[in-house]
Length: 120
Length: 129
Length: 242
Image: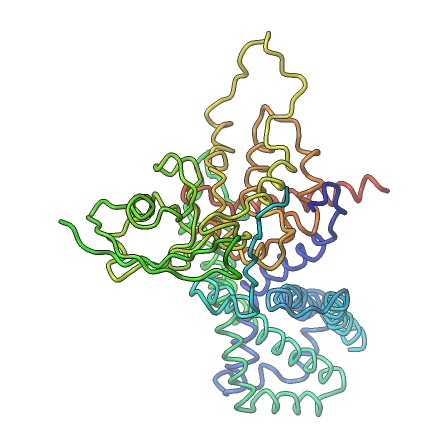
């Protein structure tokens, strides 16, 4: 039977994070992966650009810190939101624990990014 | 009088998405987040290593030079680009823009976003190097 | 120029069969024969028990939706010249099969009624004459008003297949049609259903609904734009609670 008076969903919160994360994923993740994931390890970019001093200084600046937090947190909110919905698509029934685990993990990475930066 | 109705329900299987190219494309689109999540976990360890000091940081850089890790990163890059392609396409539906009363053409809309990706990439690489 | 067309149709008689089964037919067709023409021919000439819905035969009534080679299509808009090697016809997916190609559309009708698909405006008075709407105002909702309630988008939507409580593409697009109409004041009355888990938030933008829509309604865009409305409504409701 159709429920004519259903409860309001909290989905807008997660969807907003998913959308912002998705925008970051599309615009900034490519260069991030390219730089630190491919060009630097392959030696195409000089390793001195990622010396501990240089990277620490960067992460310690306000904008650098914001970039680090965003690069870690936003894609996680985006990704785990999709994982949560993909579990439903694959008929993996995790009940209420599915979203709890997914968003907890995203929250964990976000918190770690803040904690690590504070410790730097 | 009892009814002669006996409606038949076809069950939907877990592999519904394998049955049509359109659905397979959707699944691949969703799965682009898996290499992304892996890469982000790598970066999280990287930040932790940075905090611990230069020796840990170097260990992490060596980890990132492992051929398997580089392969995962290449997959993550391809996933990011595929995500960008599908995400920009979805944006034209979710947030259509109007220029002077006329709907902005999809190709211009997505084209502008790709230009943004290129510009951001160039600027970031310039700042980093 | 006539040729023989092979057609495989899924049959089901609730009074006789435990489950549906395929039956093979061969009929003469030409360049103009539609699947609907073929079904009528079979019923007239070969098997009078074949049961299916149809009416206008010109893609405006929405009656003849069915699966053609596993793609939701209108039978009157499907031409056998495009299927020279054979065609498989099954009842519209994601709905219970009543008999042969007839499905139970009750879930669709229920959802449609729930979002109040009519102008809600107590201030409109017949004595005031016709309401005025500019072409720009009509343009905002016109594409969604093209929906013929055929249900192809429900057969296409895997989220409706996985969760039969999902309100679905056409109904959400039609809710949007009325929400965007300047004559309507029923936005809040519709948002309750739309704001729920089974409302707009049941959609993951697979997009196949828009691909199969015979009238170019683009329900995927309708649903996902309504997500923005729902998210705004959420923020407003959070602020009201303060």
